[in-house]
Length: 320
Ligand code: GDP
Image (cartoon, rainbow, N blue to C red):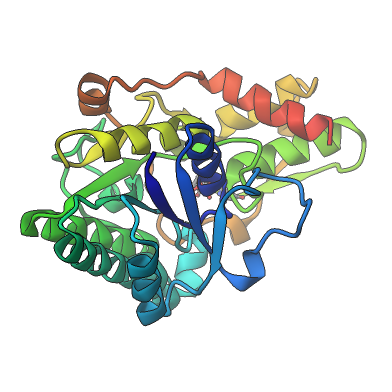
């Protein structure tokens, strides 16, 4: 049984991770912001058996003290500003939460490993956004890091700091996660926005879907698979970086077509309008990852296809 500390436990990935670890018998501690604390009996991940600690990630001193107090064997840093679009509006806050806080987590983990003499394992949830508009496709762990968004810049700093602390001797892993979705994805992300609106249109409760760039191509995977990859990476004998991706990309319009088809609507073009408000100042054309290292060294593989992911999300929204 491991003592595990998760930042961002109230998010999509944090919920799945806490559920997986609790089911395996681990002691789970989660960091939540006051406004994200789940109401008793609320729908969503089953966190009843987790120990929740209310702190803001930018309270670096409080965060360090909490990590010392909990003294975890494993730390999963999943918290952060998760919206690329939002990072253009709040670049400084994005840097604090998504970037600088990671230095506080790594330093606290390092001090804990020094004072306890134990191995403290840290997994940082990095993002394909660190590659910006990559010159090579698919990307792997050796692809040049060249972000093009404030979110990507903050994640790149965090990714480099993981390497810095690994060089110092900490068991630190950067999991370079490509887009990963589920019915728990908030509608600020394009996939859930599409599946939710498709369900509303199918029920006659909406008549339009306003989107930004329909040609962007992303490598969409199943969120619980990505959480499982992080656990495998944490518990592997050697700490290193891993690209976690399916290796297959689809365009936003292909996602729309699949989602509307699942909802029983074949003429999706009738309903979709491009709204400049959702077009980003800079947006990677295509992000697609090569996860050979994770597949060979961690025995990891995605369990759900693109069609299965779309179906699970649309079906949830149709029954909501
Ligand atoms: P991200 O990759 O973490 O930013 O995940 P998103 O789901 O927010 O965006 C994925 C892709 O969908 C990006 O290339 C966006 O530019 C594109 N996209 C197109 N229309 C929209 C939209 O209306 N909302 C969002 N969030 N993304 C959109």
